[in-house]
Image 1: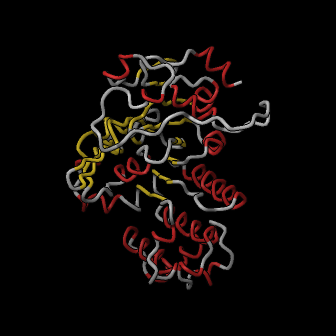
Image 2: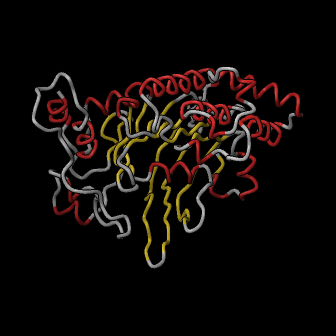
Length: 334
């Protein structure tokens, strides 16, 4: 693979769920890429399609969900065309994921050691003694105290931060090339959050991982990502370098998200800024721009035609018929 060629390319990914007589339009035509050694953040409100996008990439969408369109290229091969048997060989070995809730992701009847040994045996063919040594090394590497004792513990006996470290150890056990961290700091206090994020950064640098970091926290994106993908109603509405988008957001939704972040430099007001209106109903067929009902810049064209991602600057993509002028965005963000 060429050094400049992305390791992962998602093009037109579309995933839907059929529930009784309703169709849930979870992801609609999402497109982005991730290169080796790069950390890309995916942000958006709850229900914007972030986690479903991650599960689609991993080939973990199950009934009543279905990937109905698009392509996911990994090393130039379309993962969506691979059978489940081939995806099982890739997951854990080359593709790794840290889920939102480690307690529900770990098997309650298996010890921490059982989880790690199984992964090392299945994907790397290690014997019992070698796998045990490697598992202890992994737990030590992710900062768990007394790793030999933790190997014998069951998940419910660990704290939230310890369980998350176990999930990171599992994800990194076989030296993957792509890591998807789906809100890895959920329900953790701020001190543990910082430790977990620093650990992911360190491991990513050492292994030159391509990393997708899914989060609600724009501060995390600013501090840990080089590029950001903004999703709304299952669509990518803006994407580009973090510094560029945070300084000059062009999509009204991105601008709204950034205005919601409290700033010490701003004059104190009685209330925080909120984006007006409510997210769209995901069981209705998409028509026009999904953000139009909440957008101050909307025109009749926005109600009828769906915008496509277009470049408005170097590597800066926006899906909007009336993007916020760069000068206006800079003024608002001051």
